Length: 255
Image 1 (cartoon, one colour):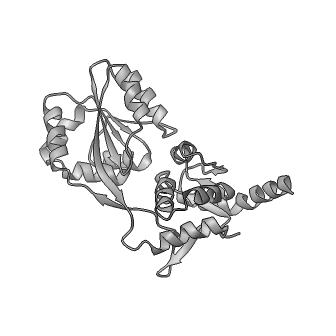
Image 2: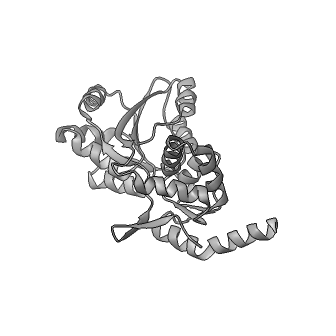
Image 3: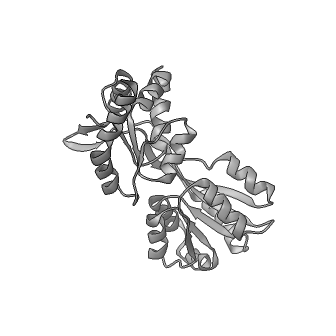
């Protein structure tokens, strides 16, 4: 079976979707620091290790000490490790790493009038999360660390969209849920979104973990297999070992 993996410049990699760019954090950090120094931050939610490190490195070093009393919620082991590297000890982790669990944690640990800051990494927090917390009187502020843009060279991405539409690959490996969103956005630019969506639903799709699977479900796409533990090694091994049988079962039902 052919997976949606290509070789670009001699290096095997998943067909690229969007590129991530760090944002200018100066104004957002200034506001964060004002809230921090007045004791008006009661939780910080960290989505990704890279974004968490970028955020902490951008803070004035003296402000890191003020963060010692702020509870952090890490959505994954990498962001938890980054927080530990910076000497921040009040870290809790949620598993699975899904937005409903984030809301559940904040509702259980914060009181009406308290304030949570969410470090965004290329993907905005769901409006439903903001509404649910707002209904409980909890204020939520987003701090975007990265944003996404189409790649400078879109040819590989355009080719990947056309491959899916034409039925070339059989297996799709997903390491981040936003990859599907970006893929479909570019397919829309090509006027092929409906065809790309149909093509994606034909593939055996293997997800790296619950957050990735949830994002796919939000887009109306099916996940066939989910890696556990949620690592790239497990993701690739699971696809190699199980994707063929999933495809065979499908063919037997349609045959």
